[in-house]
Length: 203
Image 1 (cartoon, helix red, strand yellow):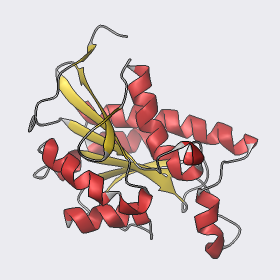
Image 2 (image 1 turned 60 degrees about the horizontal axis):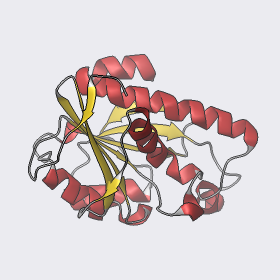
Image 3 (image 1 turned 90 degrees about the vertical axis):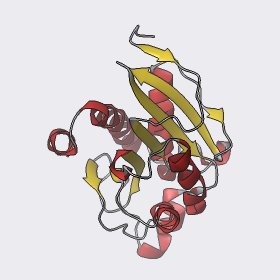
Image 4 (image 1 turned 90 degrees about the horizontal axis):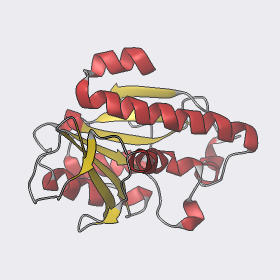
């Protein structure tokens, strides 16, 4: 583990410089599916820096690290995708992010982007994504930052639910793994750089 990274005991109410939430469904059944690419980014970031995600009262698996004295909180809600807001709202409250929602970064799968493409954005439409809709409902705002990971489109619109809950084929796996790595890099960049700079670099 790089010297600049270290664990730190978490105290209630301690503000985070960046709260990164990776959306997905809990459990082995959903691991590796298209719907879980956001959670895969959070797990990768924790692993890269020697951290382990632990269960918390906010219905999430959470890890906290410091990077050059800046606090990065990583979270994977355990509420299932459609109820993500039930976890994100207490996470926001726990790390005092309510007044700076732009520092909340939600990473999720995106049907409207080609497989492997990522896009960093702030606010905007939710494109029918149930996890994002739940977060909007609980925060009463779409003023958070998002990293969208393209998973491609299913053969037909009605097949969308089944499509995202499936594991990608071999060719697509490589594209998504690369997108997961780039999304992790983008999340880290947001810790110290402006949204505009990160968007220009990664979009």
